[in-house]
Amino acid sequence: MFQSFVNLADAQKISLITTLITAMVAIATLFFTIKINRNTVYSNSVTKERIESMKNLKINSSKFNGLIYNFLTNPEAPIDRKELYSLKNLIEYQLNDTRSNERELLIKINNLVSIHDYYFDETITQYSDLKMELNKKGITYTDQLIFINNKRFLLCILKIEFALFEEGIKKHIKSEWDKIKSEVKF
Image (cartoon, rainbow, N blue to C red; front, side, top):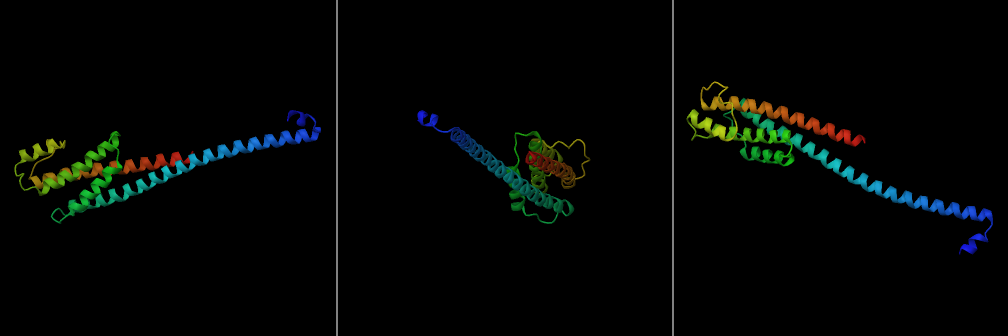
């Protein structure tokens, strides 16, 4: 084979070498293109899932906030507890309890549901019992608010927790959107 190569004319040698180099470059290009495309497809699918997750979190938190807001504006109107718990669970599934800011949101959403439940709990009639139940849940506004009656007291706490949750979830969603946008730019 080497003897056949040596016997070729110089133009044929150059042509053969050029063809081999072109073939190797083409194969290397094909290999790297396939590898880059796989990474791009994976990255795009992950980004798409994150965007979809953020959209769902916005929708679910908006519905949840709407239920709580409606309750705060008219506490005696019935609230769909099944929907409240369903939305709470959907939001919890989308948050990561290993991140401190998301852990705070999980605490706030659980506080909101607990306070709502205490509002309708007829077995808690004494302020001391209510304070003890709230402390068990880690809700500790009891020394900073003026007590009038259990229901009004719970509504005050609910308003505070609601404002904190609403602010926190907005910041979280904005932060995640910004993170997604910055990752997509690369």
